[in-house]
Amino acid sequence: MGLLSTRVLIIGSGAAGYSAAIYVARANLEPIVVTGMQPGGQLMITRDVENYPGFVSIQGPELMEQKRLHAEKVGTRIVDDEIKSVKQLEDSNEYRFRSFGNTNDYYSDAIIIASGAQAKWLGLESEKRFQGYGISACATCDGAFFRSKVVAVIGGGNTAVEEAIFLTRFAKEVILIHRRDKLRAEKVMQDRLFKNDKIKVMWNHTVEQILGEENPRKVTGIVIKSTKTQELNVDGVFIAIGHAPNTGIFKGFVEMDEQGYIITKPGTTLTSRAGVFAAGDVQDKVYRQAIVAAGTGCMAALDAEKFLECAS
Ligand SMILES: Cc1cc2nc3c(=O)[nH]c(=O)nc-3n(C[C@H](O)[C@H](O)[C@H](O)COP(=O)(O)OP(=O)(O)OC[C@H]3O[C@@H](n4cnc5c(N)ncnc54)[C@H](O)[C@@H]3O)c2cc1C
Image 1 (cartoon, rainbow, N blue to C red):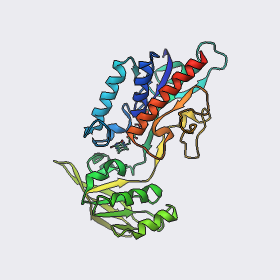
Image 2: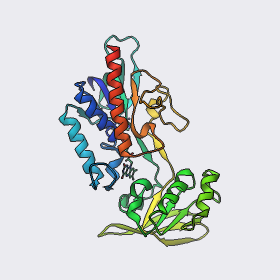
Image 3: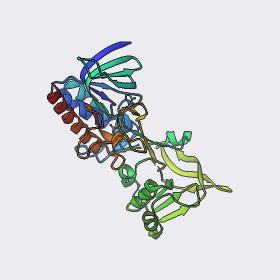
Image 4: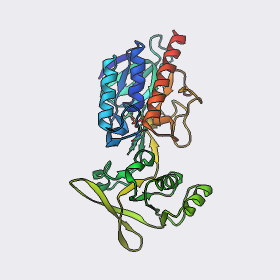
């Protein structure tokens, strides 16, 4: 077990974590980024990114590799490890926090939490195979790839209904598949959904299988089941059954909302604990975009710098 120390520890290596690192490193604060179980974050499972300013089109893993190289080049130390718990050192004159990882412990004066979130998936093997090839969990990100196509949206809450309505801008038909006989979405959203004649709802159906082809890899349909099993021809499937922030280890350490998202002071990245900042999807259940994560990563770095300046 190693013992590392830094002025600013950044937990997470997605768009938020690396962006924070670039700013912290350029302020000569020699940050450490702990990558976690998914180095590069959610964009590593995204094939084509076409909405990140500066890149007309780039593959998610390539974008994240560029960010990693950029962060390293300006002086970030990147450590492949996962943080298990964090505590404030009440009686230490040296460092304010100790974070406990699998392979190292980390002392720091400030912490930027950029541990992101995860889309919930159905858990089918075929769903994994076609991720980025017709299966998505983000209509804002991938809707434009389905112009004049038929797509299915799986879910029944606000996200599913919003995504279904949004997708009608591109798709010629949107089939909302829900496992119950009524939606959980707000009434006003439901009204908008039912009025949209591009959307068809299939009640009481679950998805059994994603069908597709190789060379080129693409989705061709899904198998759904209610009282009987049937196949639907679709070109894309949007899984909209929710997201979960990666915040389990921070319970009791910083304030969170009822869904586990970290609460930040509006317009800043300040959490309920002085010296701890949160950036990216871990504190954002509204926008969930890489550019927003990167932007709040920059904010967290500047907030942390200011905190350290005032504290010293
Ligand atoms: C299928 C899909 C497609 C998408 N497409 C696009 C797109 O085209 N354009 C776009 O702008 N956005 C897209 N998004 C959204 C985008 O990926 C996210 O908004 C962005 O990745 C959030 O960045 P983040 O840094 O906040 O978190 P994440 O990318 O979730 O990264 C979190 C990081 O924290 C680390 N971590 C977690 N727990 C720990 C721990 N205990 N210790 C250490 N590290 C930890 C993880 O390993 C990971 O590195 C897509 C999302 C999905 C799911």
